[in-house]
Image (cartoon, rainbow, N blue to C red; front, side):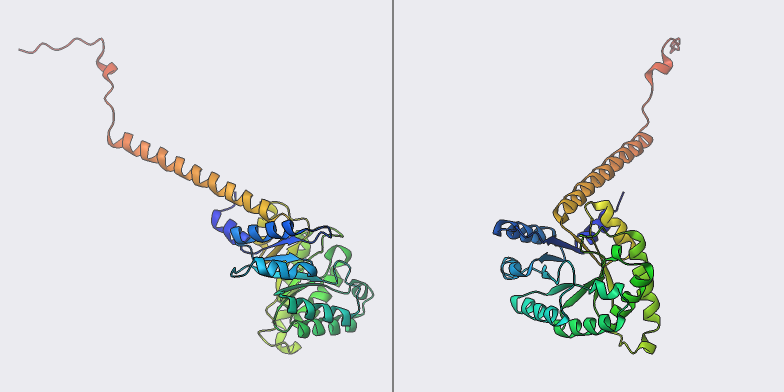
Length: 279
């Protein structure tokens, strides 16, 4: 069973996501209310919902994030840059940008790197998360694009959009391993220390507390999910059950200690014995 401290930490790194095209005002209101209630890291909404979410979260530490070139990543770089700038003007603080997957598959690494640098520049200090769609890539392609992300100075590498499969443990391990390897060579690559702070966001198919805990335990710093509220409720229920079990254990221990301190005399031990005559 997960420890309640870890459960609280998990809630604080959740990106609560609602990216359906049939979204209505009530959906965004509920998303933001839950995010404030459970203190999630951010809400991720479609670009047209940024202003509404920003208004609803005013005064809250919960960030407003959006997606760029979602879910395919096949827009021109110039279009992605314009989308980023418009999203920031609307109030977005986190930018989840889909990488040019076709160019990764074709090994057009110069194109990929130049796009990453332009995205980083356009974000102007906002949090950039590059979605690399791990289920469509080989291990070699994952390692290569992660290296380019580190060199470009993006803040997060995100596993999936959720459209082409779910986040998996092995891919996250590979991303983390590659980041660590590239960071050791940062002086050679010419990437300054601040730019080289790159973390992982696991996203796609995360529906339960235990799934979230598995990724958290690997060291990811964000988890994207459309089931954030349900995961939060699971965490609270688990915490309450654990707290109850701990209280019951303390009660049993207190009772045992009391019994040891005040042993009861068994009157039946003397039953049937002759009482001594007192003179």
